[in-house]
Image (cartoon, rainbow, N blue to C red; front, side, top):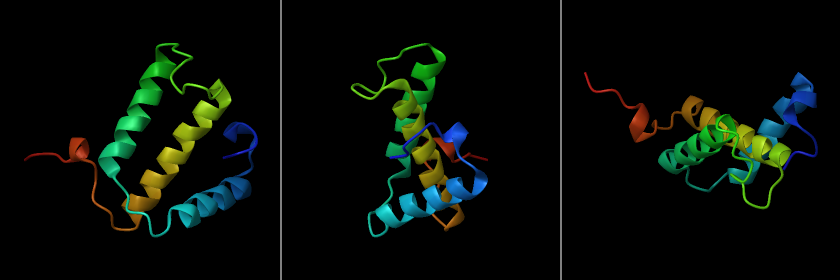
Length: 91
């Protein structure tokens, strides 16, 4: 987990963090539906001012968790992973 709010990181530090997150999850199957649900739960709660959204984590840690989920989803998608069901558009 990051040691400070992500807004205080340089671009290079964010790239290094993304690489650590990717390395940590290597070999673990990604569940894009579960990831998206957690992202949306956190984002909606933050937008609604619900500071208890992450349980025991403080607000900065909660925001950092959201950032980790976004980075993981990005890495998954650019690596050829399939999108969450909610992001699949019917034509």
